[in-house]
Length: 205
Image 1: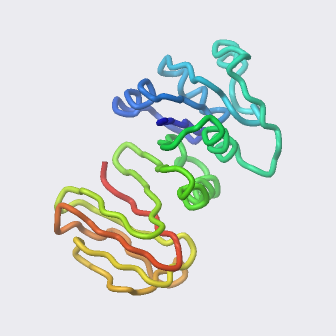
Image 2 (image 1 turned 30 degrees about the vertical axis):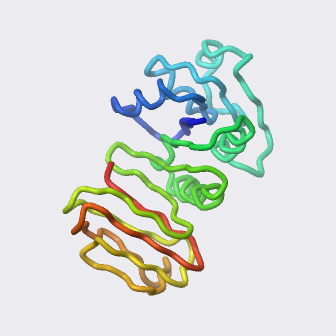
């Protein structure tokens, strides 16, 4: 089952995001993400979290039967919602409203891709960029000339990149030393391989 989760970072829907949310088999709001959905007239199947951000008016409009309180403070509302999606049988998750606003929140949300990406196919989507975790190897169709960045979550022992202007052949990447920022696609398919770590691929939509 495909799910869409709307988090609570500052966010404005664009047409494709509205379409994906409307067609989702499971549409979830991470707490205040319900406010974003209400702004475009979309009622989520469930609202999950500690419920300190969803407005009283939106909560009433959605209905208490769709509210899933998860008050613990050991997980963020987005992580609670990812766990709920897994409980509901989701196999793919598109996450919206995860990268704007506070930088610490954005970094935590990016880390969730590495934390849960082996349990379900998940990606974060911005209007012009999709962010996808890579645990072993993956290939991505991209327009020639487009910008592609590959960032390690922590340290990656060996990384291979092909189809890009600046390829790599088994070299280490780390946020403390070297990344592959603003690379350029020179072929219509980009190949990424990693050993000993997790990468995030930043790709054009």
